[in-house]
Length: 218
Image 1 (cartoon, one colour):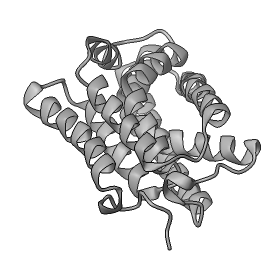
Image 2 (cartoon, rainbow, N blue to C red):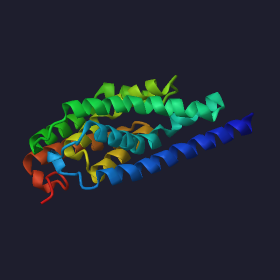
Image 3 (spheres, rainbow, N blue to C red):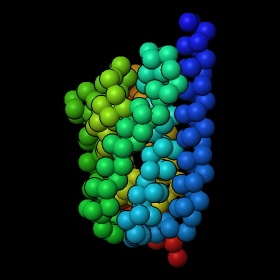
Image 4 (cartoon, helix red, strand yellow):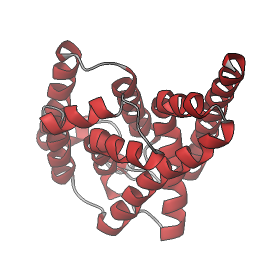
């Protein structure tokens, strides 16, 4: 039984990381030529949703791997993984639909305001609550997705504001989200990060041209 669960867990990890890697390749290809900084347009609804799903799979699945492995180990069956992953990504897909409906090309001031708000959100008990719940056992991918949206929504909105089609910003935000999913909360790391995000927002207000990738390419 133990060896069977070990094989199931190993298979789940391999499949998760392979899906994340493939999603990175798809997302980068789809985003090619789309980045116009704060002036980026999203294209058609179908195009954006397809791109958003690949982005979420690329950015979120590595950090979700521990939860996915717990689910695979608890069930002892690899077929328990796709429903968990599917419902997890479904939550992020709903976030993408909301982004599409609310998003408008905007100026650097709006981008700066969102970055400052994202940095301030890092200080809140709500953020810390959701971050902790992301590290605990959950009953379903849907529940896990709700917790992870609560934990990462500030960083994701910062990505939307700074350059939703930017591979650079996508990579930076993905690394931050992965670190927060896998590492326990520590003030010595989290406080400087939150202050840096707020500082970035202030810098965007003061000198937006100094922030790489913020303005449309010439």
